[in-house]
Amino acid sequence: MTRTISNAYLDLQSALHQNPHYGVASLTYAPIVKQVLQSIDAHSISDYGAGKCNLKAGLEKNGMRSFDYFPYDPVFPSYGEPKAADLVCCIDVLEHVEEEFLPNVIEDLFRITKNVGFFTVATGPAQKILADGRNAHLIQKPASWWLPKFLKYFNIEHLENDEQGFWFIVRPLSSLENGGPSFLNVLPRRISSQESRHASSKILDQIRTIWNAAAMK
Picture 1 (cartoon, rainbow, N blue to C red):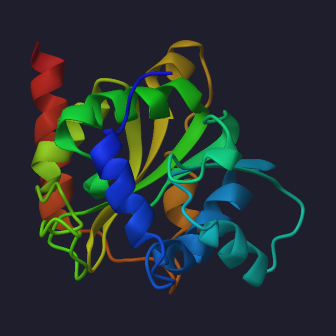
Picture 2: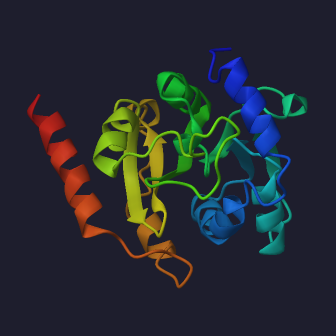
């Protein structure tokens, strides 16, 4: 498997996970993930960077019972390797990745995303500090920095901002090339609820600019 974390940073993350209040963001996103699952009729979830499996707990709290759940987190080797599933979630993870390993993480996500992915990014600092003094959010960059890295592998079908940064729904380019259906006309309608965040016109303008630039190449 491609390396996605250094040994030193793995030790720091292991220590941070001793805090019961670390890694709880998935509980906030669980209602949206539930809507995505229902929209695409998914029956399995791969939770990349699962931490203490709070996404599973959040989905069950929101009434979901019949789904296969595959967690992955280098801090918890008992989970095993990342697994493909109908829906791949990567929540409260990407901003914690060491920048030199970010390309490997994105390639990992592409490898296991066969259908749809739900990813989140926080763009500002975290409240928690690592034992070496660094902010827990190692990467603090705007959407315009993040999105081109994903557009190499994915089509972004839905994007919204929230208080921490933004979240987006993707389909792998390989899936689209094989003639798979697009959920662009389905997901925005299904996610337009009180649990959803309002779309950011600034971020949407940024992604349109990126799409237009790619189309001119």
